[in-house]
Image 1 (cartoon, rainbow, N blue to C red):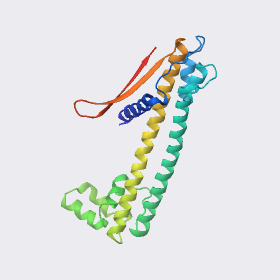
Image 2: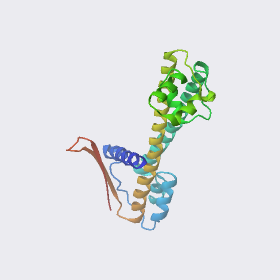
Image 3: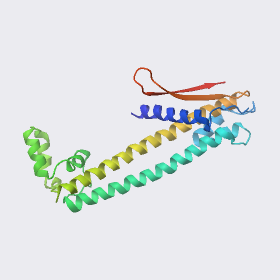
Image 4: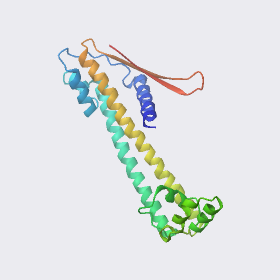
Length: 221
C-alpha cells in the first residue's frame, strides 16, 4: 500500500513539474560541488541541495521543492488535528449515547459499535453465524453498549469514517513528503555532479488499455 501511494505521489509531483512549476531543471552547477552533500541536504530539507549546487541561489526548482514541502507539512498538521477532533467527538458520543467507553477497545469493537444498535443484537448475530470464538467477548460486561437511537449510531459511524478518512489522507501526505525529498535529492545530486546541468521532465497520460492515468518521470544529464 505504501509503495503504491509513493508511486501515485510521484506521478502527482511529476504532473506539477510538467505544467510549468518546475518543468525543466537546467541551471548550471559548479563542477566542484559534492553530489553526495547535495543529496543529503535535499533529503533533510527539499530544495536545500539545489541551493547548495547553485552556489547559494535557490532557483526555480529549489524554491518549488521547498514550497511543496512547507505546503504538505501545513496540510498534514491540519489533517492530524481534524482527525483527532473527530475521534474525540465520536468517542464522546459512544460514551454518552451508547453507554460504553472505547478506551483500550480493539478495532473490531469500534466497528461493531457502529453496525449494531446494541451488544445484545451483536451477540445474536454471532450466535446465528456460529462465531463461537467471539461470543465470550460479546458477553463481557465491559463490552456492553445500547444506543439510545439509530440516528445516534449513524452519527457515530459517520464520524468514525470521517476520522479514518483523515488518517488515510495523512498517510498520503507523509508519502508525499518522502517522495518530495527523493525527487529533490536525486535532481540536486545530478545538478551538482554535472556541470552541464540536468533536465527533469514529467508528464501524465491515460493508459490506452484501461484508461488509468500513468505518470512518467525522466531525468537526463
